Amino acid sequence: MTSTLPPPEQPGLERARITARTLRTDRWWSGPALTVLGLTAFLVYGLARALQQDHYWVQEYHYLTPFYSPCVAGQCAPDAAVFGRLPWDFPWFIPFAVISLPLLLLFRFTCYYYRKAYYRSFWQSPTACAVREPHAKYTGETRFPLILQNAHRYFFYAALLISLINTYDATVALFHGAGGGFGIGVGNLVLFTNVVLLWCYTLSCHSCRHVIGGRLRSFGSRPVRYRLWTVVSKLNTRHMAFAWITLGTLVLTDLYVALVASGVLTDLRIVN
Image 1 (cartoon, rainbow, N blue to C red):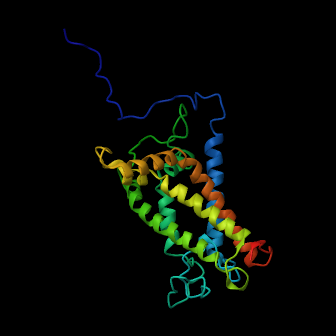
Image 2 (image 1 turned 60 degrees about the vertical axis):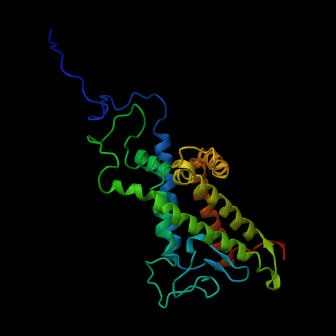
Image 3 (image 1 turned 60 degrees about the horizontal axis):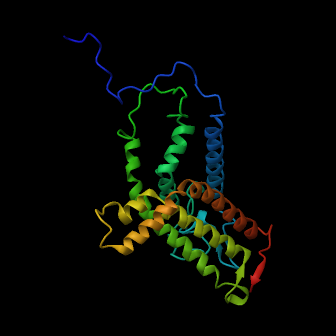
């Protein structure tokens, strides 16, 4: 006997249909709204500071804000440009750290967590479970420009290199206390706290976990890689937390260096 029922729809060809605006009764909108506010605030602050081109360097203690590292513009203070300066001055719309900032932004922009965050908040795809979507079609990350999200693994290597540069900046500052010797001030603690948390965010990346153990069929003969993989896997469970914490520490570190550089604050010395 031949069935007269219509064939079942193939899963994935159409989006879930919700006729009501939402089936939720909780404050489902608070998460996306806070995400928009948080990311927008960081982007506005970061853009303003990158274009300010001032109060980025404390000569006395060699404090360099991560927003300007590495400093490569012709206007950079000579001691701040530890890797050298380009032989020309930058116009106001090009940040001094023109090499690192785009790579770091792309690393975060393509990050698996941040994709989830801004897809749900800015793009609203999807805003939340059981909430009607404003988009009729869904192609995922299979078409331009979102297919470029797959380059995240390459930006991870760039982020590793820049984390090493930030670590170098924080370490060098330890040897510029009073009289040019070893010293520790509040600024050193701020710089190192930021560096440690940036390493936690970078190493907790999904791409890092894949690089260490994702291609192996067995860890049996690779105990060192297995140990590293377990450590990174534990960090990976807190990747979202590190993603937000480091946005805050980047702002606080830059703000502290700017206030000391402008003379608003005096760096409290612990060991001169």
